[in-house]
Length: 65
Image (cartoon, rainbow, N blue to C red):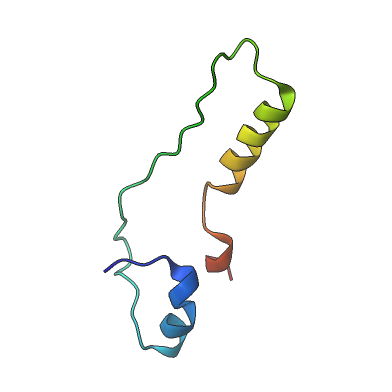
């Protein structure tokens, strides 16, 4: 069973669970932002999309040491 690391972090650190082998990656998940039109995209909507794209890419904050 695959779990996100934030609820099982203490178990991983204590050795009660083990992480998947290095190099094993689950498939990426796409997250889409659907807007009626790019021409009339409000600045605050664009800012939110840019913020989410930056925050949701890369390593999760709870996995950073």
